[in-house]
Image 1: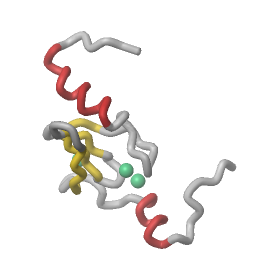
Image 2: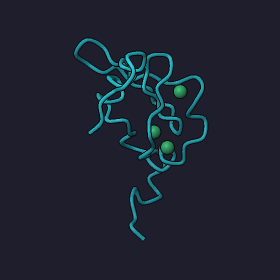
Image 3: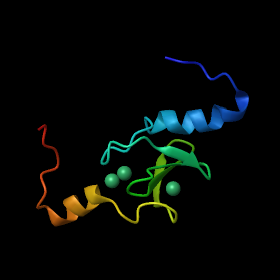
Image 4: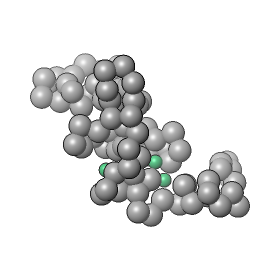
Length: 82
Ligand SMILES: [Zn+2]
Ligand SMILES: [Zn+2]
Ligand SMILES: [Zn+2]
């Protein structure tokens, strides 16, 4: 457990902590930009509100996500520990 050293990143730390800094679908570390924690893979960006999370689509990411494609297609197993 680490403490934030800089106050400038406090807000981003807070947002990241809410979403646990990982996309539940892609298992990819979220990137905080534009006050949202965004998954650079599928483009789901989580906006940390007062007491709720609002998910929006990121215009810059999520153009090519094989994880979502697997969900929609339902042909590829979601997880296979090979
Ligand atoms: Zn993905
Ligand atoms: Zn993004
Ligand atoms: Zn994702």
